[in-house]
Image 1 (cartoon, rainbow, N blue to C red):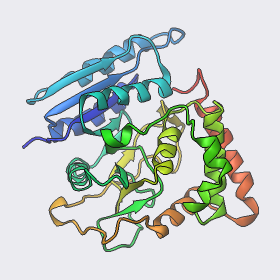
Image 2 (image 1 turned 30 degrees about the vertical axis):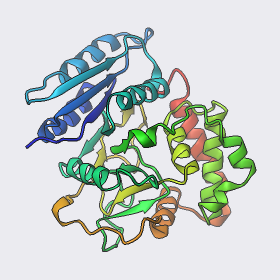
Image 3 (image 1 turned 45 degrees about the vertical axis):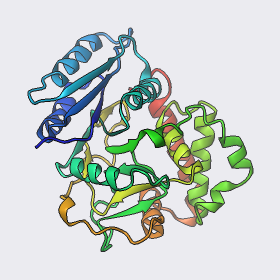
Length: 311
């Protein structure tokens, strides 16, 4: 039996990782597949051939499936292609599971997203369903998932009602910052410092990306994400659209999640322990080095995805 929820697959120029993720999508057999592809850069010899090869891979659909395509013949870059591609996706469908070409899911990721999308369809507190748990399998909770103030986009799902809040320009950020609204969401100063730095750099154009804007859109609408108790996505891309080489976040192990035996949280509230452990895990926070580590993280991110070198 195929997957009822539409799947959006975002690709560019990596045939190897694309083929692996597409194989996972083929196994899920979605009834509807929305294909979003960026075009080659003029100054990269051979990239047009790679883009064509990628498109050939994702068009090998051998199961009953309605297919919609949104291919760009010119290069829009990560920021422009993902944001415009998702605008198009949610002009076509009410909800979707979203995978980029380096986000390899466990097979249970698809039914998990489908179940969560149905359960929280009308709950505007919930903005997205994530597949990535950065603590991997170390979150010791009785529930099958938790709610978080972090919004991971390595394999995720959302609704049109949530995406319509997306603003790539982050017009609300200056006032949000001035009013100190981050204090209402994060008790720990290092969380606020990291996010203030990230949002400042994105708003001013020093970070050429799309996902920080999505994070801010979710946060500024008092939203939550769903995080599975154990990780279900492995990022297999060490070079490309979102990658700057190997990091500790690549190649996470993935784990099953039986959607027929889910234990749901009693309350729709952020899980403070997960959020605190996540930030500490990611930045290895020590009080004397908070600012230095956050600034270094932002500098790496700027170098990694500045215009002309983001892919």
